[in-house]
Length: 177
Image (tube, rainbow, N blue to C red; front, side, top):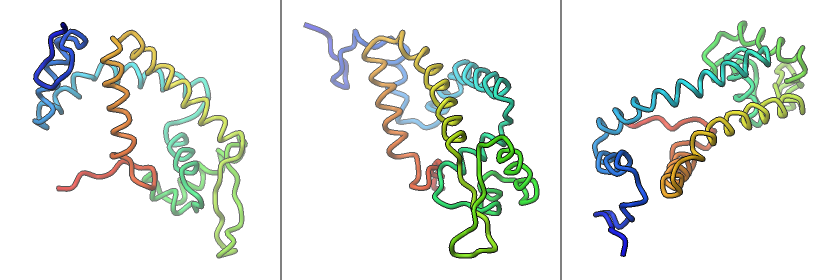
């Protein structure tokens, strides 16, 4: 018979570090400390991300713009500027650069012909897909060696974040104070 812990899980399937973390979940301060300890993982993901952006000759703000454009039905330069925290003139330059590389296109707004909406081209969609796959592979390279029970915990955590922490517009929900 396998030993069960206080939470009904097989204690031998989880490492001591993971078992200790389970008891800290109820205390947000301790959870915050655990997240901070994950800095090494975050560092490696960011370094990989930066390397990929360098290879693609793409800046972080350009990437943020692509994701914002890809996550919206219709977006104007002004809307995009608000989403990425840049001025409309700087955002217009970002859009122009992305358009010249074939990643985005401007179209006349059906409701207001003076407005131009921005959308991803097939090349822009493919670029984001390539970036997403590379980041997923980098993340999975870290997760694959974990014991099955711990991989399940990661999958459950990702599912919880995806279903509860992301708003209908695709952004992170803000914590209520």
